[in-house]
Image (cartoon, rainbow, N blue to C red; front, side, top):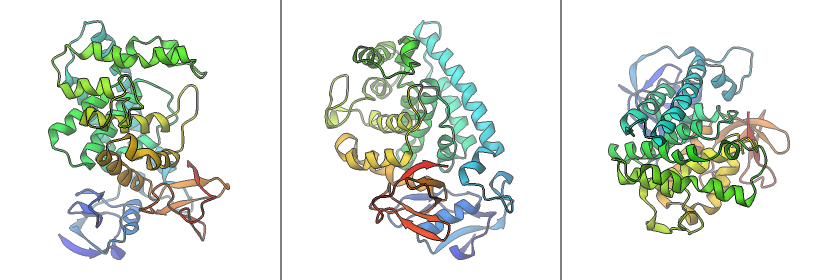
Length: 361
């Protein structure tokens, strides 16, 4: 192990200790093999020196840029063998999860938390842990599965968020399970409501919202942790009382359910749905910044926001004026408005208020 200046970092170097910002946010975990994006992420946080291992490892082929072709980071991820494999496996697991939920609802299969969540942990490792989960999820957004893929996504986000919050392992496991089961009640909702390509009527919306109570009825007598049951019941509750079904406020909401709520809203809004296209993550982040402390648990939402934005470093984006460029710096006081390098021009969206990010490309 040796200490090296960030200016001398090269692809293939291996991080020997977790790298944190000066305000204690995780940048990259221990044992990360650096590629160009990882190096750029480190430099974006104004770090000066990091510890690396003595040996250099080969950089995975999918992270090496092809010469003379200016692929965006998203394009490189989507074309990588790792992403193609992850996409196949998460789609297969979504089908299996649907079957499991239906069997649980019909009392033909026991609700075994360990067995249900096992594929989530395999997907988490396959994605590369907390540093890679969002690289995968951000590039799955053209999938319109509104229930079972969503359940897996939320479970992965809950696991990642709980780790970002540095919760003990038992709470990480509860958040992972709560995220996976939160929408189990939708197996009892008519398919035409779940797959409707038109905005729902008030009557249809009320019927869809009943998935919360239906789901709780499915799990309330099962031999599972009360926190998981509360995730099913409370994942649409907000601290200001504007949620449903009981309009709970503040500490009336289960702490693990608060994690699921943030993950659920983020994945729901940034994913494609039958009735609408996905919403740009930076629009969702801006919404979280505006109303986060009123509607969500403060520690949960602040931890999520301060970390999620870092997953977009080096990603290419389109602005509302049609220009495209790469994110090179996150403004800590305006998380939804980073600095974007468009060719030789640097655009600080915190200053250029008339501009905004409309898409990750």
